[in-house]
Amino acid sequence: MGRRPKDYMKNKIKRPKMKTILHAPKGMPDILPEGNVLRRKIFKLVEEMSNFYSFGQIETPILEETKLFMHGSGPTSDIVKKQMFTLKTPGGDSLSLRPEFTPNIARAYLENGMYNWPKPVKLFSWGPVFRYEQPQRGRYRQFWQCNFEILGSSDPIYDVLTIQIFYNLLTELKIKNLLIEINTIGCDNCRPIWHKNLKTYFHSKQKSLCPDCKNRLKTNPLRILDCKNESCQSLKEGAPKMIDYLCSECRNHFKQVLEYLETIGLPYNINHNLVRGLDYYTKTVFEIRKADDNIALCGGGRYDYLIEMLGGKPTPAVGGAAGVERLVEIIEKNQKSETSFKPKVFLIAIGDLAKQKSLKYLEDLRRVKINTAESFAHESLKAQLRQADKFEVPYVIIIGQKESIDNTVILRDMKASTQEIINGEKLVEELKKRFKNDNINII
Ligand code: HAM
Image (cartoon, rainbow, N blue to C red):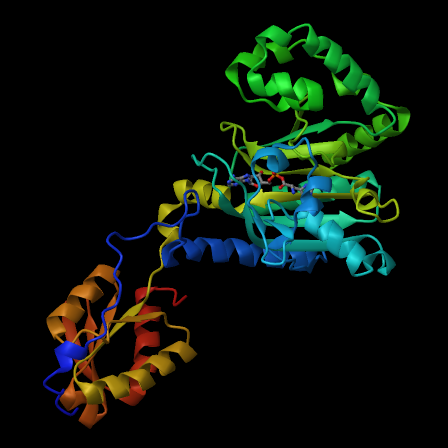
């Protein structure tokens, strides 16, 4: 490199510097490599399940017209009332970050003419959704959902298939002690009478309701049953139950759902207060949680009017979504060790020639899927060995000037604290042999 001109410092560009380090927005944590290991495992399982049950993957935009959610998620849902991230585009349109997948999928179903596809249309999605909530355990402002929808059938078997898919997913993730909570919230024929009676009932208790529920009494009394506020819990006990108001179609539907659940041996509990927080639900609603924890791992239900409300022909549908962060938290609690990102070897290169050679070795190792860490940017052997120690790898490969010229490498066994010079061409075979002897799974 040539020498810098003398007046170099004088002409140096002054870059504006932040005084403090910025933070990610509240409730929107970074997902670091270690955290992504488990998420990718979950996604792999979701993908396998979606293939098995023949669901096609659908990607919809993260931003949609705000009115889609106003109509879809519903004007009385907390999501629309308090939790949307909404922005105005430079062109003056109002767009919102998706707070869930269901309205987007209903919109895409109509827009892409999926009503002409063989029915039912089965779709799954995986991605981030956004809700302006107070962050706490299992509650974020950006979180990921894995979402399954079945559109175009009113058959109760699909309600149960949806529940079964989520139950299987959680079971395969080795989450134990699961409980399915289920309820029916009827249809447009029978629900209004229940509504009326709920309203009358809670009207008599108005004074004791929390401020939110006082409002809910005016907009959607059903939502009072969903209130988590301590002061409202005892008031719900004597509330009218939807099950006592069901029309014969809804009664039959619910009966069949329960029969199917019993046939396949899924443990369920009828929770008369389970109404779910979105306006589009009809008939079956469900949530799955651990029996000893009241945080829902997934939830869903039937939504037979949504497509019609968005301008389509009557199209019954059912679906559900699981919160990926909540799954991760539970699995991590159960199986801490399985979640770490663990390379199997650490590659140390000292000097330019060694660095060149090590890129070739890195590719050899990639081909046989031996996860490899390195710290090429560190020059000293000591610093690189310190890094290798941090990764707790069983083997370290060291390449110095001499090894680069000889086409050899030093293979260091970290546990035994021994090392050996081996031919570079034989490195991969030697490592595979050692992993086999040590009983170490490569991936
Ligand atoms: P949801 O119950 O609002 O339903 O959300 C589904 C799941 O997302 C919840 O069970 C929970 O695991 C997770 N979740 C919800 N809010 C948060 C949050 N703030 N932080 C972390 N995880 C959260 C729906 O979204 C419906 N679209 C499901 C559906 C699909 N219904 C029919 N089809």
